[in-house]
Length: 446
Image (tube, rainbow, N blue to C red; front, side, top):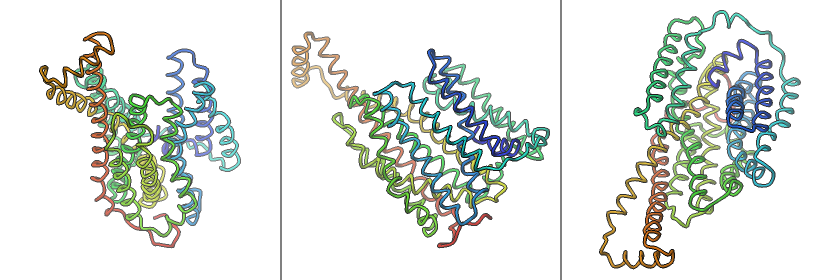
């Protein structure tokens, strides 16, 4: 839905599209909150994805098309804040509601927010006539291809590891569907008079670089939000609220820097800001590479704060570069591609990290087991002590196996943060493809 939003906006008009999306998102949120079985929850969550996917890129479109150039830096700054604060506020608020009330309220909390949003849309956006010509002249090859290609790719990436990749008939079928979908999308780009998504803008040097950096941004943002809660739950025995508090630390720099962001966007070179942001994000990953079995939330404080600073600089200036690198008419397509790339980066991260985690866990476990000799007196002493404490030799051996697994798990997560740091640094040279905006001048569309 994210890359389809530009076409849907041209078809229905921005106000009508957003009213449908917000109303639908509210209804599906309520459905999730009242769900009593898994099927209902899946239907509700799928509906939230359909409707929420429309909302993500249209915010950038509003900034590009509705605000005068002098106000666009402020608009992009506020939009970027919501993109960063949403993922960090969600676990904190959801954790508090789950621990103190019920998980149902994590969905019901959307209702008043969406109510205010509906009112603002009715008052703040002009009505636009539905342009049915876009339906008659639609690039159906491209639309169907994008649905099959991106949908199939996302599922393959996120479920491939669990299904043992190409050992699974399901994954093979989805891969074939994905290839066919992207082939249909390519046909639409070549033959359609009005392609559903102008992928040609990716060939623009600046915008193409922005897309690649958006992939890296999504990998670090979603990857860290995936591995940190896992670590805290399994090693530190944190509950949902405690984990949410650690994730929330990433949002603290956003609150601190918010008043200065419009000024920074006007006067700081995009290349310097994005390069610094990517470097700080890499350092934030390096800061979490010395975890131990005794580590808890405090071990992530420095990394989360640094990650927040890096996210602010990278996200906000890449948003600016996205809009500045294309014409006003292509802003909707650029926004859809940028946001889709960021989400795909998250999918790549989840798929890669799941496989990497299993491989490194197995490697570290084997290496530790190879250092243990049955006749080692220290090993015999440890097993005897644990057997005496636990009541049997079998229990002592199980305790040893558990210790090995725990240490392998910690070492694996150190490797994961090393890998995310290296992947982020690898994208740094792309900042030289960005074109700086004139300092001290409002952003103009060109």
